[in-house]
Image 1 (cartoon, helix red, strand yellow):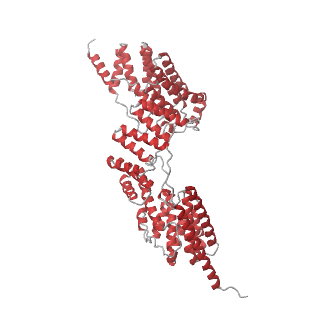
Image 2 (cartoon, rainbow, N blue to C red; image 1 turned 120 degrees about the vertical axis):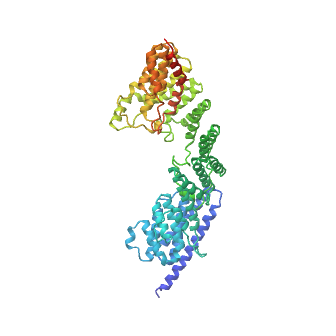
Length: 624
């Protein structure tokens, strides 16, 4: 019996390659057919089945020694496997790099160049393979597609230096001077695929278009966040002019609207936001950006309408378009962080924004209803947590209770405000006995500054104001006194109090406490004065001025009381200090008082302050 010749083995291998190629083409046609199916579950099952078939085919090909005739098919199957895996998982799998590495090593094996390169990184392997490919022109179409998939992986993981280096080698650049990613992508020219080449799911030219759009959009977003507005505008316009899905185009238009608003061109910004809404989902980001635009223009009604539409849009589950079995722009975009114009937060975040804006713009009744809806949404059958912010750096749950109480008092719903405060106190008061130990931990630097005394004291302050509205003076004075007792008892005497947490929206806690003490003293003093107990009122106003020396409101109340008691010398001294005192600036303007405290301070601001000063000056000029 004769032994098989090398010719017979070569013929058998060629026959296997033909069969494997037919199998690859059959599976690719089946996958493309699945893209047209309406049933998502059926499509996913068919795609998964195709992926398993391609994986088996790839194992068969890689089970043989690497050979140039088989490499075009092997690389095509490798690319098809990667594309299907990414499209099914909607992310780039962690082991995708390993699949690309194995394909590159197989190319180098055919050139007997693998040896010492086993320890090389992917970037160095690509340099070696692309240099070797000059000797293997038949591999170029498949290698360019594999390079496109590598570019997508590096773009999605922000390895832009490696990506730029590979594109320079791919383009045959002799100089490393140009590292502009968009220019390098535009210069990339994938070779045409031969008509008899194995079928692939996505060609290199299509992948190049996806990479161009994604890269321009990513660069535009980053420049927008960092404030480089002209560069951001140019890149975002580049992305808008590229081929992309309607959902991506809506995001690009939203970013353009944000950019133009910041550049002082609100009319063009509004046109882009309208265009974004016409493109359909996602509706959240353009509606939130529209509310910012209307706020900047001073159109409060349109601003609040946009926020109401946004809250409604976020409450409805939208059916998204079925994803294609391709590498899409969406897969290469970063998840929006809070600094991104594409971040619109959750439904609860938007409801809080709507409620707080109603409170700030004097729509008290609407604010009260929105806050109650928000608390109901956050409870939703489960007890809310007290410390984490709603949406960093937004308010935490206790501050939401306090803002809701302020809104209810402003809307003349004092009884409801009392109920909200009682609910907050029932959830926080149990912490007060532990405060001494917490302060010791703060001094040792092992714990962040606790805010519980601030919340509990503020709740008693608001309860006092609610009783004032109900004309229950005794109860009001009792709550103001309870607030002051907690503040003076619970807070440490030393000033080394550590850093404030995110719950205070960047406000330094000592400033908030100082204003809270002053507000409680003024409020109690006003009640003493209303009941004719001017001596007690005077004492509280004196203490308020001492607690918060720069607080002009406390000084005005003190001046009025001294004048009423005919204590002219002391009143003159206060008047001179007020005349010499300029309005204190907000320190650095990088922080602000909590909204509930800002609103409360506006309630106790004395009316006609300048008139009071002029009248007092006139009385001083009159002869005794």
